Image 1 (cartoon, one colour):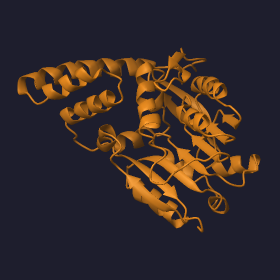
Image 2: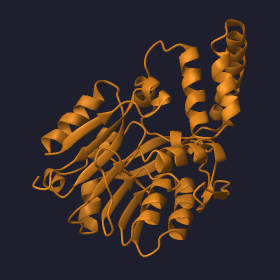
Image 3: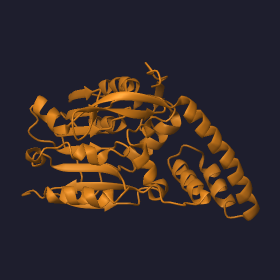
Image 4: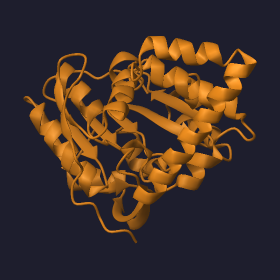
Length: 306
């Protein structure tokens, strides 16, 4: 077990909309901002948040989804869960700075299908890749995907998020269409990727974290309704859903989650939510890397009389 990181080197970061947060990685933060604020990935297919709603943010990371909700709505009852202590510290700083008149509960544990502990892979240089189910995440990637496809998807998404200049994005993608330049570019990309992997492997740590269930949290805080359950837990999404007791599902109005489609998991999630009375929409076209990585967004809402 690697030693626990007590803190991350977070710095003030001004988001494009003018909000100031504490960020660990500018690149990571720009990509998250694009996904959460610009694309509103957790608010599509009829999923909404209104003033006074109860929101559960499972896999809160440094808090960008929570900040978006808090900055746009009033009097929320927000529960945010983040199991890695160093990331949780940054989450606390960010959420408390933007809490406003909302009631916020921050929890330094993860959620699963039962009360237990789990080992998380944690990379302080790329916190969004934190996972207790790394094999599931990698297993969802389309097999035998060419390096060219992976590289083009990465450039397209990072460029689209504004994390690299537009001219550089256009140049890199155009170069991939010319044989000689493509080979040179892929060779450089391979060297870069090996360097990234080496750095990641040196930095990778194992953290033993506490996990609880959604229903146990609902009982502890006497939560009688959840207007939105947002789940982004890098491969452990089905475990989180299985932590909802049958009697508590009727208290949940909307669910949005990222699903890594390994072993037909999207259909399992679809069946579980459909069986609990939700109308389910599945979106596999969020981004180029999501398509390559077998990542789907699942949106579940109830009819007013459901």
